[in-house]
Image 1 (cartoon, one colour):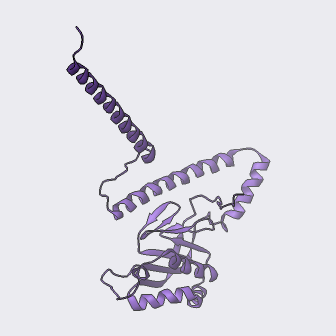
Image 2 (cartoon, rainbow, N blue to C red):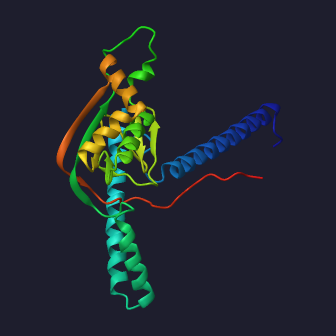
Image 3 (cartoon, rainbow, N blue to C red):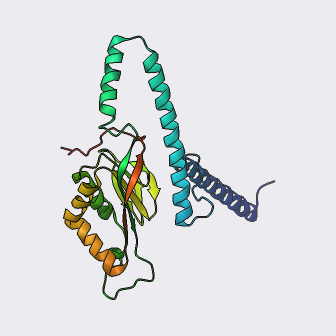
Length: 247
């Protein structure tokens, strides 16, 4: 029986809807795959999506991975120590000599503790840039640099050991160390001669500027001498990364 014009129209409509359905299915499938690759098995929108909870979750996850790295390094050291190889033993002795100055050995001793914090939200100064009421990477770096100049033997920030390959990065109102985000207050601890550390802080123009703003606008600044500070061994990467120019 030949198709009538109305039948042909219905068939074309069905074909169009079938094609549209196929396109939509392809787009959805692509979106699901992209989300899976991006999340790498984690939740793209974790529960309690406020910044503090996200920072806490990421810090906890990074700390768990750092502990795993420490455990694996212990296994490597144990296996290396058990190996009967003269060349390997020589390299192990060399590593042991360099571990302490490289920050790979835990240290304890007297020193200083410094805490930096954003000004209270209630502080509002007409005409003043609000960014000046927040602790930035350069503020933290100013104190850390002054402490190194004062002969600090070891420095930690938020409990993490700082070494030459650790960068202090400011991301929004958090600071990131080795991929771990931290919110203020930022606690810096340094092991060293307390008199020299104080003198170095007083001699730093950047530290003096921060102290001036702390007095004027309520930025958090607390300093105290501590009889015994514990600085854990650095547990992150020690490899150097740098940018290179492309021809």
